[in-house]
Length: 153
Image (cartoon, rainbow, N blue to C red; front, side, top):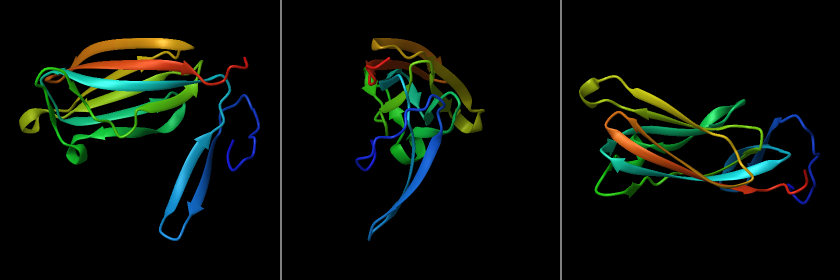
């Protein structure tokens, strides 16, 4: 529902675009109407090492990916015990038959090549999923908590 209007329930996902203007700003909003939608709330912890790079979140078939962490702007994270990485966005809504993809790009020290890692999660009606992996000098843990949005199947 946008502006009090019920949007059509179409099976094909189409990203729509709307520009909203106020006295102080102009905001471009992209949105899509989804059937059988689930909400994925994710958290990322640095378990070992140091994280200097970018993290993106996306849904297969929908571009562009969203930058949810950029160490140039958000700061480099070093590990002292378990460290939560503060993300710009922690929630994505996607179709139950879609795929949540988190992309990690870690810059190497002293001009070394950037290491890239992709982690995918298959949506579920509810519950949580956890994956641990290494990327460059960082050991990371990603948790995704699933909740169903559209109860009408």
